Image (tube, rainbow, N blue to C red):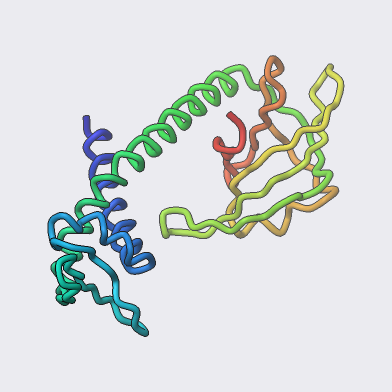
Length: 202
């Protein structure tokens, strides 16, 4: 229930932000509120670094200015409540994928064995900010894994690595990993400074 409430609040906040930015970037979106604000055609007025609107009456073509605040007051909620459900379902889908990944990881790690591995290459490095506390990087690595008593194989994985350890990971680096022999394509780090990026592989 707490997660449901939290997801709903986040969806409403994001919906508000999207609608506000959308109105600034695409003022024509204000036409969604046209039936509530104008008996004719609602149009944005073009101006440098300004956001203004007008109502063109169909009977005599008379132009009436509309207060920007009034247009925002009607348009933002309409767009927000239209966008918020889409955001809610997107967040729900992500939560389901995360839960599935956590279940898979727990099952893998409960049967995991330690194996040596060599980094063949670092394909990609993206800097991320983890909860605004410390910086880390998402590394996409190609590893040559050598499980005990099994044939070695190549695996492509993504790990989240603390910044302080990123520069130690390059082609030729030897390290240890953890794998489930029954599902060897998921290769988990065996170090406290790295975490498996669950969103990389379902």
